[in-house]
Amino acid sequence: MDWYPLLNSLRIAAVSCVIVFFLGILCACCAVRLPRAAKGALDAVLTLPMVLPPTVCGYFLLLIFGVRRPLGMFLTRLGVQFVMTWYGGILAASVAAFPLMYRTARGAFESFDETLAYSAQTLGLSNFFIFWRIRMPACRQGILAGAVLAFARALGEYGATSMLVGYTPGKTATISTTVYQLWRIGDEAGAMRWVLVNLAISAAVLAAVNMLEDRPKRR
Image (cartoon, rainbow, N blue to C red):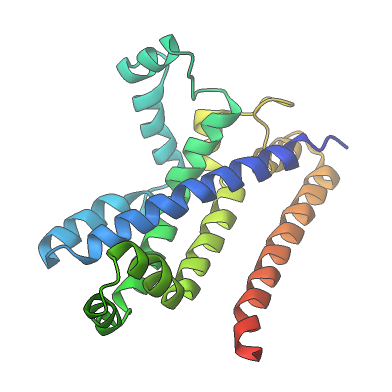
C-alpha cells in the first residue's frame, strides 16, 4: 500500500493549520475592533470560501495563480508554481480552512471580558503581554476548536485541491483525491481503506483535543 497520500495529506493539513491559525487570529483581532458596518463587510469577504462550492474556490485560485495568469507567470519566474505541485495543496487547503478558524476565533474574542484587559492595563502590563497571557488563555477553547476544525477541513479538502493540483501519484495525491480515483476505477476496497484511515486520524485528533480540554478541569 502506497502511503504517500497519507503523508502528503498530513503535511498539507499541518502546514495549512499553522498558516490559518495565525492568520485567522490576526484577522479576528482586527475584526472585533471594527465598527459594525466594516465588520460585516470584512466578514463577507473572509468567510466567502466557506459558502462557495469548493470547485468554485479552486477555479478562482486557477484564475489567480494559473501559469498563464500574470501573478502565476511572475511566481513561475521566481521558481514558485502552485499548479500541479504538492504545496499548491497547502494554498487550496488554507483557503478552504481559513473561514472556520477565523469565525471561531472571532466568536471567542467577542466573548472575552474586556474588563480583564482594562484591569491589566492599569497595572502597567503591555498589550503584547495582555494578548498572549490573558486574552489568549481565556479564549483558548474557542481557538483550539477553530484550529481542530481547520485541520480537519484541510485534511479532507478535495474540491479546490483537485482543481488546483489535480491527482498525480507520488506527487500531489492526497487521501481525498485518492479515494475518488480508486472509486472511479472500481477499486472500492482500496477506497474504503483510505476512508477508514481518514476516519481514524479525525477521531484521534478529536480525542486528543477533548483530553486537552478536560485536563484543566480535573485540577
